[in-house]
Image (cartoon, rainbow, N blue to C red; front, side, top):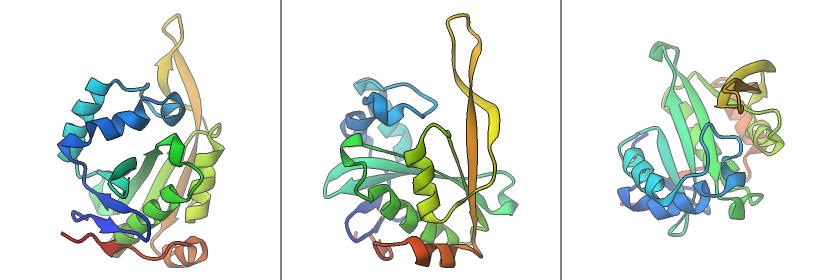
Length: 193
């Protein structure tokens, strides 16, 4: 899945080392990172992140025209023989509610399953209904409710602040049916060089 691709409204490509300002435009927004395992990011941190993501095949930059509006994450889980991938996403709040996350994630999952994935999973905070509703629109199924299974912060006394998680998944055998039912923006086309 190395090459970028186009959807009807978006281009999805590899990160560039010069994407720091675009990353900072949304990773500096508290509402964008409220459910992420990291706080708001400084301009310098985003410069470093852009350079790291430019070398990391798990991250995809989602662009509307030439503007970076979000990112997708698709990581192979261990053991690799199980052909399971984890999906994640973060988008600029100014672009929420327009279907961009759905359009780009559906196209990325099309590619993932076409290249042999067996299962794609995602995890989401129950307090983030926009995220779990997106996963359900994509055709992923909620597989449980994990109680206090993750902590990304500590309280004033240094104790972990525990969060619940909803695990989601979709199988390759389910994807064509779920994708046909939920996809509203067509198939991904290769990104022209």
